[in-house]
Image 1 (tube, one colour):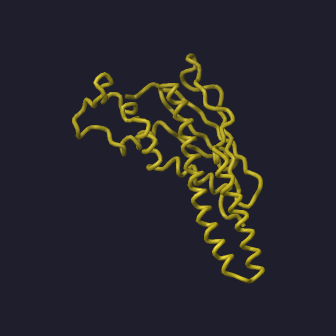
Image 2 (cartoon, rainbow, N blue to C red):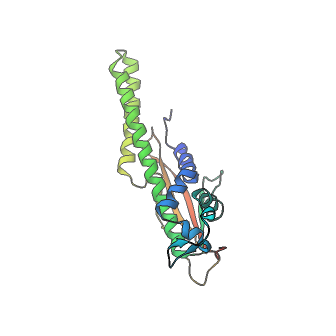
Image 3 (cartoon, rainbow, N blue to C red):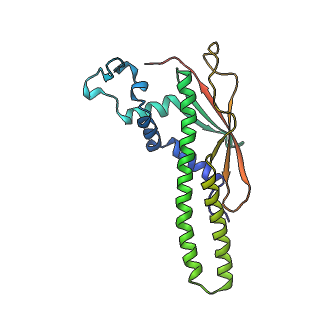
Length: 212
């Protein structure tokens, strides 16, 4: 049986990237409120030009970013996931795509290491408390699998999403949609397997005019 990882970690990673908490932290850490709502921001004075009650909130920013800037789609038949950043600034679109992938990788690595550490402690405690050979053998196999999972998460920076062809800016004369897909290979560690399940993820960076 699989104790975790595999397709389950891909699903969890996508859920994390879509989540309000993850997205809000990304917006806050990169100071994106002024970028998402430029019409309400005075860049020269670095202050909002609207009444305090109308200053954009992180809840509003999340709704805008999730609904109009970032798009995640998944082909259930092929397992291909497409991350699209729909933004008027080419450089920012590319940077945001890369940063989102980096962040979700780091979070999934941290989660896996923490979960495996806790699981190993419980399994080792159970193994020390039984003298039944069959039970000890089963627990030893589980411990080995959990150690393998923890080790993989510890040594691989690109734990879930492995970038093999980073996003790049489309040409200036190609303002609507790039002709080339920017490919990210997603490899997910299976807890009881020595191999990784590989899924291809296309990252498309679209450019549009600002609606602000």
